[in-house]
Length: 481
Ligand SMILES: Nc1ncnc2c1ncn2[C@@H]1O[C@H](COP(=O)(O)OP(=O)(O)OP(=O)(O)O)[C@@H](O)[C@H]1O
Image (tube, rainbow, N blue to C red; front, side, top):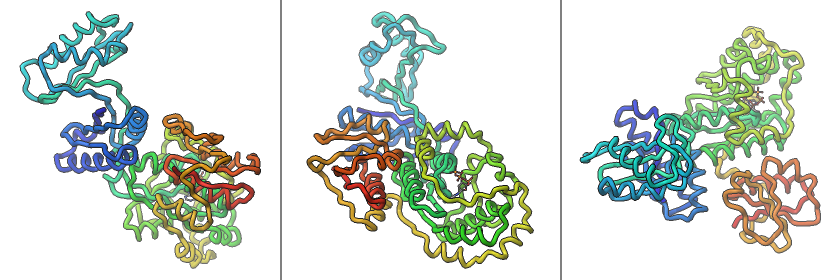
């Protein structure tokens, strides 16, 4: 099977060298994503498109299309058949089998895109193919505006491309083609969506989490970061950095006026983020803040917060309605994480200020022992995101087996969409509990059996297994075939 990858539309206005750089990056990302599914996959570069060729079977093909639909920088993935270009009537013979079934009872229009020198025009191809399809299929008629089916043909020099299914991509820029950012992620609805948007716009997005107290919260945030990276990150190397902030919280609770606490906590986060970013040579920070979403998210407060950072603070969601954010979270698959995120201890003012005054805030901060920030930074844990699970495993002994144990119950923790694409074929009893529900449902699982967690790549399952084991009570192993 061949696929044609249509670029993001903004590429049309780029200079030649910039265009080449973006296209190279996109090709590299596509290779990185598809190699996991088909190591033999071939990706070819053309000026106006990329071509992907695979000899994999239909199940893997579906997985490949699904993966491509989440690679930033792609507007369309077209399934195509290619033929050496012959005469006009030969074109008809190639198009007919690809469209006959879909045209049954439908209106259609033929669209032909042609590059190279030929002794016919695109319009002539459209007329000839259209006439033949009308005469030889069950189509009800030609309709140039809003047809039920568009018959897509491309002719490039001596090659004919007959386009079958067309899948919409997410658009944006290839991840890694724009500079890196450090995203402050807290696992609610907003910050994962903000991180997705920076990834989609081509920024290599590293994750920074402040642990305010609560292992469950940390595991939950790691999971959502890992999910975003696996689905949209194109295997780019990124870091997950976890900074212990319990001591900061304790200091704030004892030293700072209640109404100023929220703003000061965010200033403490930005101070640390700024230093982490400096070390990593990252120019911008990202947060999920949105003006007026909660009463303390005022422009005044945000500018007082920003005052401590030397770096640009990007807020991709600043003017987005909450319902649109939730819709985006649903579309990208992070909604369920947010809805199931374990409660965590935060610094919540009973009556937060909405008009922070810089002098007042600075005065409050004189009582705060800034050495605590140095300690938090010194104790930060920085892990390559693809190694998160190994790091968790180092802390605990969780057995990883490549074959299921007789009598064990396999828990398939993949996202339902992923599970549907490649159902698990084992003889054991299989429970389907998506990872975002596992924590909640684990409490009700009978204790008299061994559970083997399974996920596509073996990362999420390791992360969860060590977490469940740490909580005690369940006999858990990892099934990683
Ligand atoms: N514990 C944390 N670790 C990292 N970043 C955080 C943390 N808490 C808040 N932030 C950052 O500050 C922003 C605003 O914080 P706020 O408390 O309003 O977020 P939230 O409601 O906890 O979570 P979210 O923004 O993910 O919905 C977040 O979007 C996130 O970028």
